[in-house]
Image (tube, rainbow, N blue to C red; front, side, top):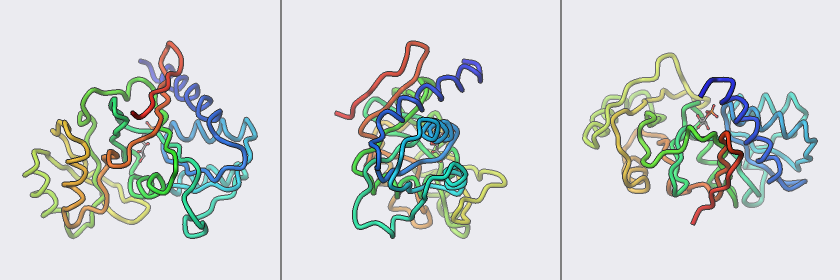
Length: 224
Ligand code: 5RP
């Protein structure tokens, strides 16, 4: 798939996602190049929102530039209506690896505060087993060494993502060599390791719907 093919599929899936957004919704919005397309299509379709809850500075800037009001979760009395985000990998159960763009902590927070989660991807992101894409871990800097030892014991090899700190000021470790047969179990195990702020497995709260763009159109995969 060429870059321009992939960009065309991102725009197609973004348009399909816009059709899922109820007018006047409180909408959670993820981060990344697919989400950038979604924000642009949302504005082009002039979909009115009550407010947007953003998962990153990058997304906040794009939303504000297009005139959308952005609020924090602390301004809300209850869950948000819908969360829309991309993914680095997604499996048949709509479990995902996320965090390639480094926004995994806020993404997981906003996703978990949403009644409905729609994942938007092109077909290259679909996998049978998660783990070919290096698994991102946002970590406390002082804990890099013990987190590395603990992750090695689970079969992965972490490396520091060079020159990157998250919106929260933390480094990211990317873990290679994992074949994630049981994403919920590994997400739970990583959640127990002191010093990991957030791991990029989204399985305990998978997507409810995936919109997947390929050259044959956009298909819908429902969570069962
Ligand atoms: C950012 C993410 C993104 O959703 C993921 O990296 C996919 O990005 P893109 O749409 O650019 O391929 O998790 O932290």
